[in-house]
Length: 468
Ligand SMILES: Cc1cc2nc3c(=O)[nH]c(=O)nc-3n(C[C@H](O)[C@H](O)[C@H](O)COP(=O)(O)OP(=O)(O)OC[C@H]3O[C@@H](n4cnc5c(N)ncnc54)[C@H](O)[C@@H]3O)c2cc1C
Ligand code: SF4
Image 1 (cartoon, protein in one colour):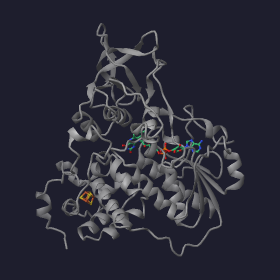
Image 2 (cartoon, rainbow, N blue to C red):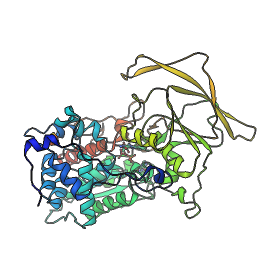
Image 3 (cartoon, helix red, strand yellow):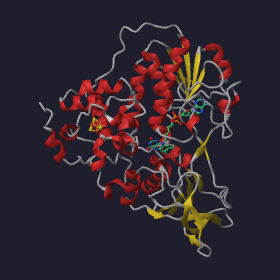
């Protein structure tokens, strides 16, 4: 049985590396890149935790996980206890442990961060969740009194799933409506298999269904039924329909053949398994030389997917530098290791095509960084006379997403801001119409999985208060 180690020993240890799939192999497959901790790795890493009386790490966790407590249970080899501790506040631990930007959240707030030795909290969370799945440990829902109130949740991404699970756990009757054929939102159609295996997403959604949530797929709120109609049937509604509409740059040539939005490119590959065509019947175009425009996680995912589909040369075109790129550091490193060519400080001006409408290049211009703009990042400025043609035959635009108005249009009295995002109270997620709440990307704009989880939790609490 492992045990706590003396404080002096904890200081001597260096953070435990997580094994990864060999780079030369992984660029030819869609299997997960990061391989997870072994039991020994997890205990070693957990033993480094100082069990702080005032754990600063928790300030960085939007899901309020009791981090020192779940880590302590790993040291004690009480993995079931550790799993249940996490489940008290986060219903998606195997997912969050894989895709949360911990280096910007809990690990950044860990006291060890000052010494560059932050505890790898996400890797530990992932270990515990994977262990529980492998050992068939389930949270049982026993002795919960039914409340006889019905709640509708719109959208099955992390915000909707979390809110559903939290409400069903306290006795509400919850139905989750999802437009697509599979629940999971971006976790299923956006984030690729090699970062987040779909079997894991299905498993955690299965656990939420086990708790009693009903999921209705192929149900487009705003089309199949309006929010106003749902409001007649249900006692409260949580709108968590995400921000899934693609955005474009409005460049000349953007309507040529073989210009994809990242959204369509990734949906084809992830949800419709186009990478296994013709086994699955959705095709996807694989260019010889591809340009991906953008610098966030979506751009990295698109570039790395294109590479795995067989593209010979993938360029990532971004108008600032790696320092300003919003993608997770880990994703940038993985993309670089895999041979993605970074064209930083480069702005696309025009996509060029031949008479048949096929792409035969992209005109770009070099940039330099000036003074910081309103986002705090240094403003990119053209360098005159540096125009050049990037030889590519496929372009993927990954510059972010926007709100789709279909849900808002069907919800009388629920106000949106000028970008179409719902206006809510920060603490309760309540909208401008009584009994209707909203959270996740459809309130924040493109954000993170864990902030969507946090909104789902806050909304569940507020809905419970509202219905009491
Ligand atoms: C490619 C990609 C990679 C990303 N990588 C990361 C990452 O590594 N780490 C991280 O933290 N975040 C990442 N993000 C962001 C993160 O995934 C989102 O912030 C998060 O999923 C938002 O959750 P949500 O529940 O608000 O919405 P979503 O996950 O967008 O889910 C919304 C759901 O609502 C459904 N819906 C929409 N309209 C309707 C309707 N009319 N009726 C019924 N259902 C509807 C949608 O089909 C969808 O299933 C990434 C995003 C993308 C696109
Ligand atoms: S701040 Fe770091 S060391 Fe302290 S309890 Fe949290 S994870 Fe452990």
